[in-house]
Structures are given as C-alpha cells and as structure tokens.
Length: 129
Image: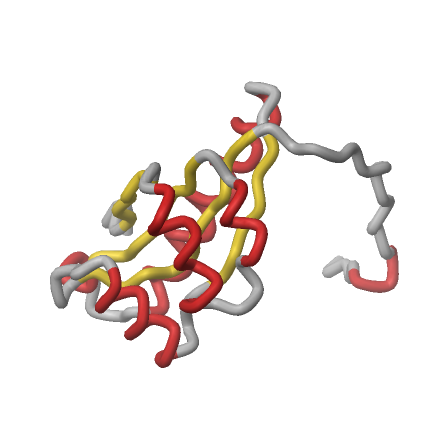
C-alpha cells in the first residue's frame, strides 16, 4: 500500500526521558538515554489501523539495524496496542488525535556489552512444497 504512515518525534528533553518510567513501567533505562525516538502512526493514512503497527515496526527495525551500523545501542519499548499506554503518551506529548504512539526507541552508547545469543529455532520454520 506504501502509505508511509509512520511519523517520528525525536526526544532530547531530559525531563521527558525521565518521565517515561511513569508512562511505561519497562522504560526505567530511559532516564540515562541521551535521546529516544517516539514512533507513531498517522490514522489518516489508512483505513485499517493494523497497518500502522506493521509500518511502524518495519521502520523501527530499520532504525535498530542502522543504529548498530553507526556504533550505537538501542532498545525498542512497545506502547501500542495497549490503549491505556497509547492514551498516556498521546496526552503527555500533546499529540494530534490522528497520531497513535506505537513505540519509543532509546538510542545512545551502551554501558555494557552482551554476548550474541543464537535464537534460531528450526522448529519455528515450515516449508510449503
């Protein structure tokens, strides 16, 4: 459909990053992040809101890959589809009604190095012949 429904807000504001813990309990590390990107979907671009999440997720995945390429660390923190979290973020950022917050991506330089975990599971793959 190529609706390009994604919208982005770069958050550098220290207080806003610290307040994330109150909006989404799994964002405690945002207090230390130098910035984050709020990924949103514009409901005016589609007749099916489900596409907003697909488009947003694809955009986020590309951000995560490029961040690693740039030597940065990231963390993808979901907001949607939980309506209570969506509402909290809409109110906090005073978003227009047509913008649905999908996720917040923390970006910065990691203070730890994690070993790569092989999560390949051949049981999750099927073949159609």
